[in-house]
Every structure is written in structure tokens, then in C-alpha cells.
Image (cartoon, rainbow, N blue to C red):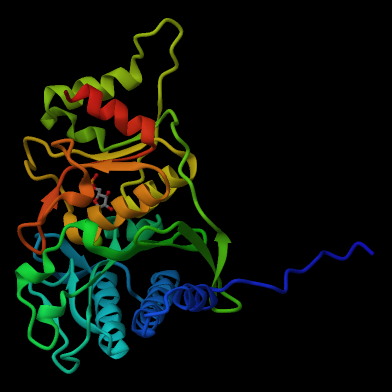
Length: 339
Ligand code: AHM
Ligand code: MG
């Protein structure tokens, strides 16, 4: 008849989360509710980003955050949307946001068991140029001994191995959500604007084992260690006879660079260097969530000391780290080059 076959058995994020919850007999539904609140914040951030130029949301807000970055108007709005959604979920005890110096406690929910770390709009220097940006999130559970009392910063400075779930949303040509649960697979959803739902479009994402693409801000190479310099040189000038040099891709939005790396394979790096000896990216809401996604997709993520990223213990809520992540074999090359 020439009629397209229409899929009527669509897996939305809501359905996916419900089905995940059913797999865990002991689940109370709290985690699922928290994820619904997260989902709403992604949808609203996506909405404001789409409309930013039309409703005067481009440009600076006139303030700066803890890390000294000038805040964009959208950084402020994204952060406010996120805080409101987490508070409203009633399941979040505390929130760590890139945009707020201190821990945000939700004392009205003293028995909530979850803690969320987020970068509401990562890559915001790209916003006004219409380049993809994203939200990064990690969800942790408080130890039983802390529930009911006010958690201390040390209680929240957990290594990525403690993440229950993590992922990111990319606001690009379409809005993509990638989420993974501890020990689980990585699943990608695409926002259907007409339905207002995230639809499962990329089930069980696996990162290619290797790929000749590298992604790094080469403008920092003056400050790199000799080993890091030698590593990137080796990608551009292969030693083997007839060896093919790698391609370079760098968007400058970690979410977009990581999403491409996840789909196509390759390596993404923001190494620690002489200018930023601790690296630039933040452990709790940038490095660790991405590392969980990469590992669960079959890739690897390490810091500049070649230590597994998920095991890096942050010493403060905004602590930073160098990072190399991506395809399994590409990270092996990084390790070999830094021996
Ligand atoms: P932000 O959180 O202030 O937006 O900074 C994080 C961003 C990442 O998305 C990206 O990987 C990196 O900073 C780019 O930094 P640079 O401009 O130094 O290459
Ligand atoms: Mg940011």
C-alpha cells in the first residue's frame, strides 16, 4: 500500500524506568521518581535553549560561579530549573551543582536518600553560537548511617564507583539523553518534541573498540607534559610505514565531544597540564558520570595519572581532574605512551 509501518510499541524513558524498577524487587520507586524529576529538568532546559535567541536569553548574567567562569543567563536559568526539579522530587537530600559554591541541601526532605551532582549547562561558552551544549548528571545514594541527619561534604565526595546512575543530555540538532545504571548497559533516547517524550532510539550502546579520531584542545599543547605531547604527536605522525594519521574533532562541549566519541569511537582528552595542574574538568559532575557511561559502553576512562577515573576520590565538591576517555584500545595507547 506504500504506507509506512508505524511503530506503536514505543519505549519512552518513563516506560524504560518503570521496567527497570520492576527488575529490582526491593525498589521503593524513589529512584524512579527522582529520574522523572531529572527528565523534566532536561525537557525544560532544552526548551529554553531552543528559544534563547528569541527571548533575550543570550549573553552574560553579570555574575561568575565558583570556578570563576562568567555565568551566562542560561547557566543561571538551567541551574534554577534543576534545583527546583530536585527539590520538588522530594527524593533528593542534597544537590551539587557546578553553578553553586556550596552544597544545596533540601532540609524539607530530611529522609531523602539520594544525592545528585550536575552541571546544568556544560559547554555554555558555546551557547550563543548555537553549538551543542549539554547537562551532565550523577546520582549517588547516601550511606544508611547518614540518612535522617545533614550529610557532611565528605559524605558526598564519593568516587564514581559509588554512582548508582549517571548520564547526560545533549541539546543539539535534536535532544539526546544517554543514561546508564551501575553495572548496566548504556541507553540513548531522543526527544520527540511533538510527543514531549524521550524515546529509546539507541538501546545498549557500545563504543567501538578503536577509532582514529582524537578530541582535545590543542591550544593547550604548550602546557602539556612531554609524554602527553609525544602521545598526540604519535597520533598525527604514525611511525609505522604507511600508517594513517588520526582525524581531529573538537567541539569544546564535553557532552557533544563525548557523545560523538561514544558513537564513532576514538579518544577524548582534557589532560592536566602546567597551566591547570589538576586539569579543568570537575570530578563529581563532569568526569565521573562520563566515565561510568564510557565503561558501561565497553570503553575506558582514566585520569592524568593513568588511574581509573571512577576510583578517583574528589577532595572537594568542585575538585578537578585530568581525563582521557573513549575506546578501549585508544585508552590503552594513552597508558602505554605515559609509562
Ligand atoms: P564549563 O562547564 O564551564 O562549560 O566548562 C566545561 C567545558 C567542557 O564542556 C569542555 O570539554 C571544556 O570545557 C572545553 O574547555 P576549553 O575551552 O578549555 O577547551
Ligand atoms: Mg558548565
